[in-house]
Amino acid sequence: MTSKYRTLKDIPLEEVLTSGTSLCAGCGGMLLVRIFEKVLGSDAITVNAAGCMSLASVFPLTPFKSSWFYVAMPSAPAAAQGIRDALDLLIRKGKIDAKDDLKVVVVTGDGAASDIGLQSTSGALHRGLDFYYLVYDNEAYANTGFQASSSSPYASATKTTTPTEILPEGSLLTKKDLFEIWRAHKPPYIATISPAYVMDMMRKIEKASQYKGPKLFIAHSPCPPGWDIDSDIVIRIAKLAVETGIWPLKEAAYGEVTHSLISRTRRPVEEYLKLQGRFEHLFKPERKVKIIQEFQKRVDDYWKNVTK
Ligand code: SF4
Ligand code: MG
Image 1: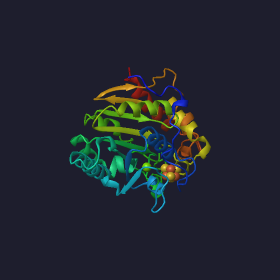
Image 2: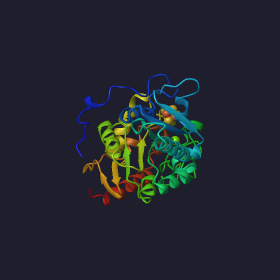
Image 3: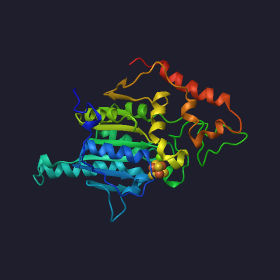
Image 4: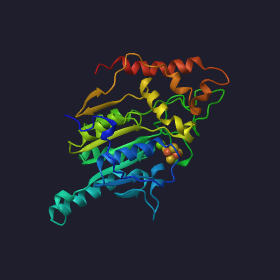
């Protein structure tokens, strides 16, 4: 399909998410939600699973022009189902006009998406719920002090994976592959997105909008306090994640995966790791060559099988 988003000038000017939140300066997740809501427009109702974004809208104040519904971590997809059903019933009974229908959106962190809310998400995918699902993946439970989630990457330090002499890696576990878990449910649309690739993000949201059913997005979301980075390098970090191949930009419509970007000259993962305090133990007090090589190998192994 031909996209109406050809240059950055095509970003809608109207803000759905306005200023005045208590989130951290430079929050990558907030930037994503802002663009996401801009592209969807104000005729949306967002269901938020408890997490960092819950701080965006605290009664009686809200920076959103559209509706925002806040629920506990496991239940956002179930709440989205209730809202979708209520809208469908109201339209069927003629209480609201079909042209006044709202898009139903879930905004959730990686903890709710990969761990606590995975069961209700799987249920919603199985039922074919017509909704958008956006994960701002900051790779830990940032809202409660940065404990590890199943989305935390190998060799990262979190509050619950502190590197020690006998466990120099920090986290030994592999990041859960949420994209593939979702793909196994065969939804109409899934994509990964990045705040450094706004055009790619907008085109993917636009493309997803043609489908009825679950439309899922996993967003790389640099988190200044949790990743121990300055807020002015958030976009640089996001760009490096893509350029090193750590964060593949891809999509799958009814199952078939295609990558938005396949680079034959990926930067070494070290360029991404060394800028972040959560990976500092890989470089200080001495360089942990084997762990850095293992990290690089995992990324190289992924790209070995990518052809499109
Ligand atoms: Fe955003 Fe991280 Fe702050 Fe949470 S802790 S609001 S994800 S920057
Ligand atoms: Mg998180």
